[in-house]
Length: 401
Image (cartoon, rainbow, N blue to C red; front, side, top):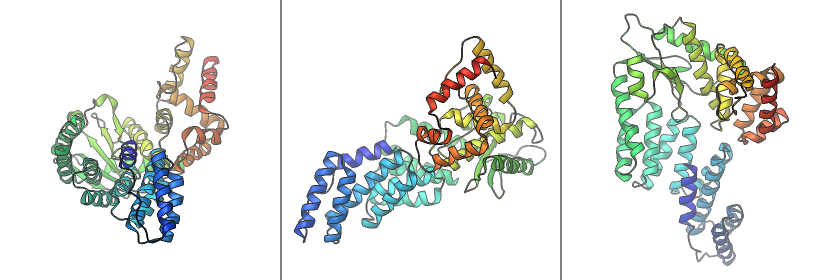
């Protein structure tokens, strides 16, 4: 979404030079507009800050300053520097509360940071300023959806669909959410201190307390190892086998998944009882994904890190994947980390944990949470670059552990 926002803002340009009361403010504003046209937003920002100090009541200067700060916010958000981006968005809105693009960017940022309540307010303001903006309607619908207000989400998406008649993906999403709403109408809900749980309620006995117990144990176990805990309750849906595919669009074979867009864990129970160790492993696996996202503040590591850590935490398949990597090495069929996030990702994470310890893995995630690019965070943490590490890993697997 950030690319779309940046392109729209740059295409819109900046307000023309104002006949400010201060000739120097007028000159600085003109120079800033020229810098924006060259794509030099940092230089434009410096000029506009000076112009605004000389003539704080000039509307055109304030508008330009807000737009430049918004553009910088979009660029920072696009590379995962969330905190810096938020500073620019809020500064833009302090200058001009009618800067719709800043509200839109702030709402998107709050969604990624798992703050849907504030995201609703931000997107609502963007919609008020520009009711015909399909992106704002999409965002508001997503914020409502993340809050669990499915009817409100569908209402906003219907308005967005009217503005985007060729958006087939949106219409498919709406159809899926309607199916999800219908299915969950017969489900039960239970909340704990750290989870908001929805589960199939047709069993002879209420499985809710045991499912919550599983989740709370994962919260303690995974949180202890990673030294981190999510800042908000994690929503989890336990589906029956019959309902999982219609509600999610995926086969029950995958077991479950964590959706980065809405922050929900969805699990196919597949006939397993809450006391079954396989279900406990699946819960730990998917909860690990949610916790990684929280620690990294949405600045996600590559999938091999996600899956490797989740497999490490589930305490079940890591030995199996190690043997599979050895078999592939003997057959000269080793794949890259990118193309084999489960097998090679598991081997990579186990190697890093054994050599550097889990505290160092936590440090990698924390550096990502600070907004650093993965290559930089990996280099600072392990004193090697990701490509060199992958080559070393292949050599280790090939010659045996």
